[in-house]
Length: 126
Image 1 (cartoon, rainbow, N blue to C red):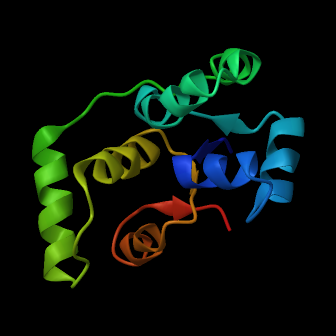
Image 2: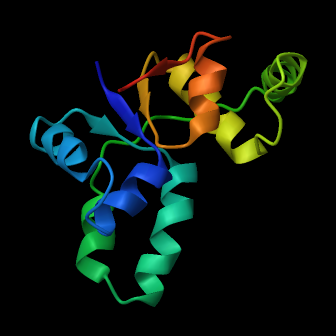
């Protein structure tokens, strides 16, 4: 099963901390995918830091198509709020929806995804 790698994991990987070894394994096994939203979060700072080679490599990662279901996002946010999961931004809801729609496991260090996975079909990579 492919793994959608969230920006939080990429940032830790670039700083050689957190789950860097796990992400390196997933890269070596060719199990990772990304989406345009995640790339939009992580590429701009790399461009500013003149990390062109890294940007080029990230653009080669398989893209998971995105089809945002806005009514689904509203339902997901409502479901989160009803279960006491507050402060989840729309970008993270879109990432969550993209993972569920694509049948992907989500690899993230953001704690709210763990909470969301307890109440939805979100499958986390641990």
